Length: 441
Image (spheres, rainbow, N blue to C red):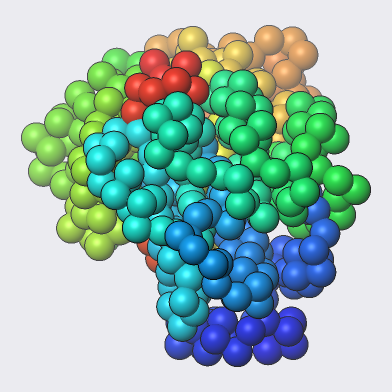
């Protein structure tokens, strides 16, 4: 379906044409007419589906149709995001789509100075994109007035709940008029999300374009069993073979990611690390360097698993398996996007068998186990008797295939990403109230 048929304001269609976007994605085609009609909405969509435009375009349309405010401009739309990079990304999209409209937007998030944000609010804005913790700080200082909000968007609501933001969200929503339009977007519709929707949405329409915990069919998965002490060497070999490709590597801890990035640099592989201890400026610079190709490897904790918008990312490597199986889906969601092919490679040691078992249960599928020549583990991976059994063997242990010393030599056809390129997702960085209480990752 083309954007021209959706009834958007001419200024929005003009901006979309200039950006090279002609046809709406499924989530956009379903959600935009419902939002334009004024309905509350529950949208089920993962990153990479075009969900930002699904709420940004009709939001801009409705605000533009309403005309400017009389007197000082105060936020008429509020978009809550779980992370500061996602807030920046959403605001970049709003400005790109609305560049021919006379609407102003700004972002407020932790990890940045309060005064520039206060100054931006005082100058007057129509749309505010914020992380919950820093928004609470502004509410307590009375530097922001939410009494004129007409449209509320909860973006990546499941992630905000996972990060412990529910109390902060409730405090923020208490400051917003009850007569408003509310849009909730989530990768999954868990019970907690449904409860949140019942509490804050009015007779919402539901749009679901992704299967719960779905993984793109264009992604291939492989496990390389290896001793924990040899993971770094195997990673360097894989990266050396794929010297032309950008690769996102996931580790478990901040310190471990820093150390691994330094070790890759010593091996002659350009690398940056991104995690919760990095300042906002450091994160944005790392993302810019990675997306521009200045460095080709980014080592990240799960802080980067959501919201990253990196077109044509061919490979994600799990140096450590995530402690929570659902995070595997979020991690590998960075590759194989918008129809592109991708690879999800996991380096798994003997003591990570339980984590691997949980991932296979979640995916309801087996992951091929391929030994790389020269890196055979000293102990097999034990996953327990109730794990999936890919070859009819107890414990779900597929007989490892032997792999020559040429791992991952090709990646097939790639396609352009459907969404705008911009800065991207991590955690709410400041230490204000409501900020992530589980930021130790």
